[in-house]
Image (cartoon, rainbow, N blue to C red):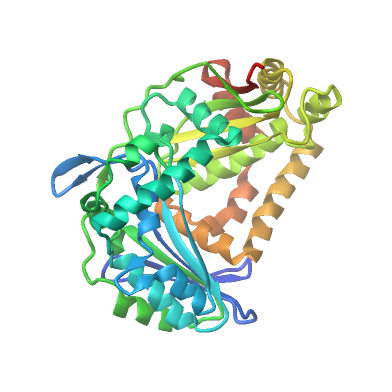
Length: 423
């Protein structure tokens, strides 16, 4: 394995692409007892349409999440329980663009890693077990759909995007998952759970060569085909300017969203993430003039917040929370963006925001999980996340204002509201 030392961070990452195409990253932490393993595939809720063996397949919404649930089934029993009995703390998640399986432990790490690599690589489904899972996941979907925060988020994405599959719920719907069969799950596993579409990241007091040897011994030798994906040809404009839904809530809630231009894979993605995060803090962060002004007027409260998100073929800024006047807040937010672009930002505030964001990235290196997920996202996105110091050193106020000028505009804006049901 090849060690890469990041002098400004004091971190070393061992890297190698194995003969079967698997990307391997190991970050030694000799002074820690805990060890963390993260095994991920570039396959998430957005990957519903893809080409396998020359044939385009349209799969049900929610199938990546469904597959995540079923992957813990083995002929010998349940891998989740086996890992837990072995002293590990295992779990998994599905996002828009990836599915990850992970555990941390202090003892029996090699044995636990072998279990992880084995059950993720070798699927075991039966029609009976797949049918049984539909009731479990269906109940989970109903709980999600009753959550106003989730409704705001997914309805904002659907207002922003008319075609891109980012508008598809990661969990799917009760109706969509009813079409999932064992055969469909096997097809999706065959397509995406191949070494060349996956990455194994290990952080902790481990020997990189030993991790490499285990991966070479346990995982399949075949690389797997390169899968072509179709996220949809998204037009430039938004799908819907406003949405409103009545739910059992005590007061109005909202999200104001802005459709940003997508960012291609490569180092530009890291720069876009840094610019997006800084722009959000300057525009509506807790220390911003906008936040302080609207908070003092009672238009927002401590629930207010937002973020910048990058996804395949999509990017957006959103902000919201509880407010009795969502329309007023959205109008003020647009006005503040226009003011910043026109007048600029106080240099002291800009420098404080820049330092705060850099410090947040630096503190992230204290978390084994954050290191592993960041390296994984970087590998899938074609950039090195540990190069963030160089990016921060090159960012100027003009760069951030240019980002706001292009992204936070009236023609790219949507407003999603949740209002109380009438008695």
